Amino acid sequence: MSGNFAATTTPRSLARSLAIALAGSLLLTASAKVSVPFYPVPMTMQTMALLVLGFTLGPRLAAAAVAAYLLQGAAGLPVFADTPAKGIGLAYMMGPTGGFLLGFLASAWLAGVFAERGWTRSLWQAIPASLVAQAVVFVPGLLWLGAVIGFDKPILALGLYPFVIGGIVKSVLAAAIAVALVRARTR
Image (cartoon, one colour):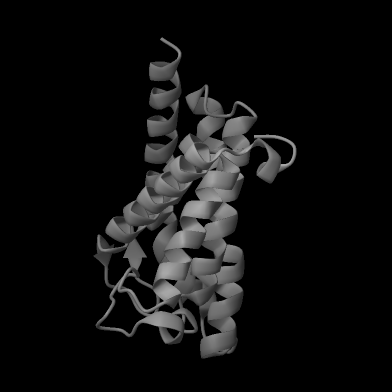
């Protein structure tokens, strides 16, 4: 969509966009529940889901899906990894994973931008796009983690190194899914 959103959006298309954003938030919730318990940040399938959402929905709708997910979590719904056992709502969001959750918005949006620019037409373009879009999660994630547990702790050992191999695998899978979907649409 271009131009003024309010002027170009019909109630039907707005309802469709809201339904898609809600479905995306449900995908994020399901992917949060597929996790490997690490401390202090669990390893989940969420980054792969973020990338797929961004690649398929575009930047605005993917960011809306992530925003809906974060609002659900802030409201106390058990949408995050290890909830309700590790807390819910804003208390959970203010913990060690808070920065990563914030990074989800940027990651989904950036994946959508890459898709709009045609980076999902080829696996050789989609993989680097996927890796960059996923890496964005770690910027606020590591900064927040350091602020919460202290920068004197091994922040990279706790919040980055354990996730590198899995992140690469999830990025390649998300890129392959995106390219397959683009090819299926163009047939």
